Structures are given as C-alpha cells and as structure tokens.
Image: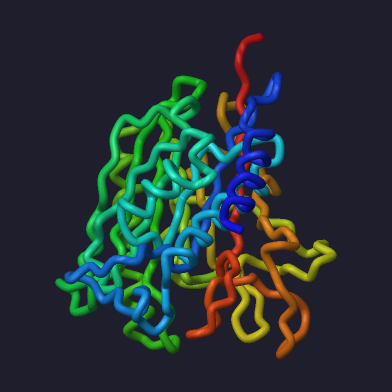
Length: 337
C-alpha cells in the first residue's frame, strides 16, 4: 500500500514541478502538520506518547504514512505553482525533515529546509521549506522566546530566515508557533503575548536597518485576528491580507475547527511594503486562501458539517492529514520582458 501511495504522489508531483511559461507567482504556505514525530525516543523530551509502545502506538508504518500525507497535501496545493516557501509547525527534529524532503515523495521537488531546535518540552519545532531556485537563503537563526525567565515552561522558538528573491530584493521570513490557549487561562494569554512580543522585536529590528522592509510572518498563532496579540502587538507593524472563505460550498469556514466552531488561527502577515503594487514584488487582498480539498476533511457527526481529517482523535488513530488546513498567500512580481 505504501508503495502505491508513493508512486501516486510522485506522479502527481512530477506533473506540477515544471515551471509554467510566463509564471510570475511566488506562493507561500503555512501548515501545522499535527505532531510529525519520528519513532525514536529523545531522552531530553517528553515524546513518549509517540513511540511504538506509547499511548499513540506510533509505528514506522504510521510515520511513513504521515510523511506521504504531507507530500500529498503539498501536491494538491501546488496546482500550477509549487509553494516556494512552506512554514511548518509541529515537526519534531531534523530527521523528520530529512525524511520528508529526501526520502518521501516530496524528494522529487528539491526542497531545502531550516528549522529550530527549541527547548519545548514535547520536542516540537517549526521549520521552513524553501525552493532554492526562487529563494536564495542568506541567513537563518532561531530567536529565543524567554519563557522560563518569565515563569513559564519552555515553548517553541521563532525561526528567522533571510533570502534573495527573483527581483533581487531581500525577503525576511519568520515562522512561529505561539503557545496554546490552554483552557483560555490568564497564564496562557500572558505566555502568548510574550511570544508575540518576541516576534514583534524581530520585525522592529529588521525595520530599523532596512529602508524598504519586506517581511513575511507566518505560522500557528493559536488566536484569531480579534485577539489582543494582533491589535496590541503585531498588526500595528504588519498587515494580513483578507481571506475570502464565506462562499465555499464544502462548509469550510477557517483553518481549524474545535467543538463545531470554525476559526482561522493560522496566519500569514506581511509588512506594508509588500501590499504596495508599485513595488516589483507584492501581494494583495484576497490572494490569501485556506487550502481544503475533499480528501483533507471528513464529516463531523456531533456538530454537523465537516472538519479537518486529522491523524489522531485523542488516542484513536484515524490516519488522516492534520487537525489544521494550510493557509496560502500568493505574491506577484513584475520584471522587464
């Protein structure tokens, strides 16, 4: 079964990896892949539930199926244009990124990657996949969220990457996975604000030394746009292009659904310069979308409608893709004919 899946996804990917003549689109994708763990124990992390003998019974076959599922989502998203940048949340370590980019069906596309090595107690991190032909990586580093110093348990650090794009401009990219909303507690809100301020400090630092700052900030923010992390911290310096999802016939109304309520907690924010059409590289309102194809969701019996087809529902293995849908943002550029 795995061989058939690999072949099918590889054929699909091979069909979209060729550049389209006259193509002037740069695609960014942000995706929380829901616990992409390997099957080996890290003695420094609390990863016991994702071991063959753990609560999730996480086996090699399930692991490889997960990698192929992520590959299939990328193939479906690609359409006539592959994502040039893919921000990933909930990846365990370098080995899973190596397997995804070098040993799964995704290997035919030549993605490279950088990632964090955070002190998160469960061992999950963020990563950036990039196409070296359209994003020439110049620098990458992780920015520490000072959780422990402020009385919180460790969380995911922020990934910063800088690269050259086709226009010759420099693009600054941040990938983040802010702390969860655990029971909507005050402590959880304070921790999330701390992480948001860490992101904002990087944005301010780039803006202070760059005449025309071109920034993309993406990831799982564990918050909708009405949350205080946006209107008090992030959106004074960044902008989020509008998202048109109200007319979808499949019932999808966001990137995440919890107890029957749709939310968009996965975001792609940009600096104001990237919204100016007079610039050579720009995006615009309604270039952002939620990617939800029929194979990626399932009926939700308790509340009606559909929900993301996830890998696990509690301890129950479902074999799906993720409890989140990816969010996309397309950029356009102009050059001399």
